[in-house]
Image (cartoon, rainbow, N blue to C red; front, side, top):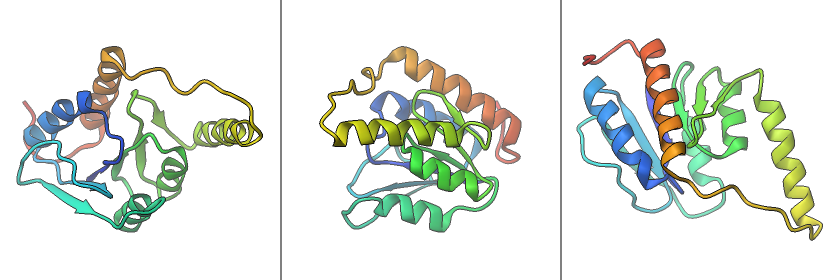
Length: 154
């Protein structure tokens, strides 16, 4: 299993959580973004910078992705593409996207986008905070315990 991080807009609070797991498990990881970001140094981490442009990082992730891999992203259309390739996706707040729920998330996202496009003022997501980081850490570690078959545990 390989971990892919959609690096654009990746919350700083999650960087140490993810970095610890990568190092502890020797988890092969690609951080894909359109600008230089870092979650830390480790031999297992490869940084991939793509050209600026809408969805360039998403396209690269989908291109590299294999069945069973994990993607960390808050981008629901990307998560949908990940799920369709029989891979896994978790968002920054700890929500695990699946075949059972991704279409519902996508429909809600599209509805909100349509409302915004028509001039409706909608609330954005609440600010990211420590509770969100904790929920993410729980989901991420639980996922790794169930699915990752490499590295060293402990």
